[in-house]
Length: 237
Image (cartoon, rainbow, N blue to C red; front, side, top):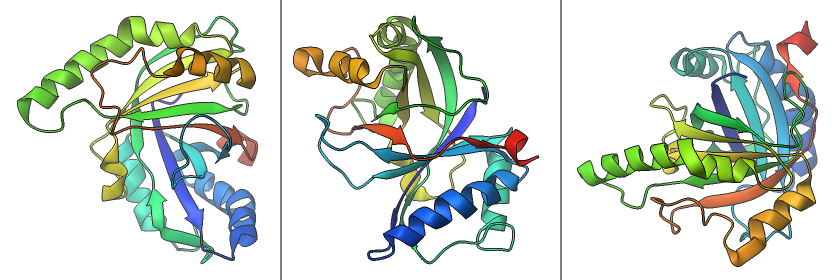
């Protein structure tokens, strides 16, 4: 799997929700994947009625970047609102937050069907920050968090019922927007069985209890279900 993903959140302009959905699913996915720096993309929608509080982010696209994220972002910026990648007025650009993340480690779950070029199912995303936010103490906590998640914690999440795979991601230095730097890390759980995953996450009352070194007040967690199939360069060819 590619080692750099962009998790792009956005919202429609009020009253233009239908056009936003049409443009994103029918036009923007294919235009963006046609660029040489993006190998695939898939749309998701936040699941309502889950234990986590509602937030601003309801719409998500997972872009799989092809190669160096700095070069990818330069190409995306140069292509923005051109013939190669036209932008619809139905998207509220002020809401766009597209954090670009680097894969640190991925662990396959016991029930996984290996994801290669298939569309993804539901994703549970937990965007995280370390418990302290400045100075050398924060750098030390980042080292501790990365070591913790690369060892027993990630194995714990991968072994939960309904989990196909668990992966841990770190924010890259290169970003499209400053607002994308809000969270430094991401835990992503790929669901094989959505209900079993939900049940296992809420068991005990704290779905993120296995993650130490993080600040519970500076966290965003949500379950997302796919809205479209995965569009890839192979499909486009």
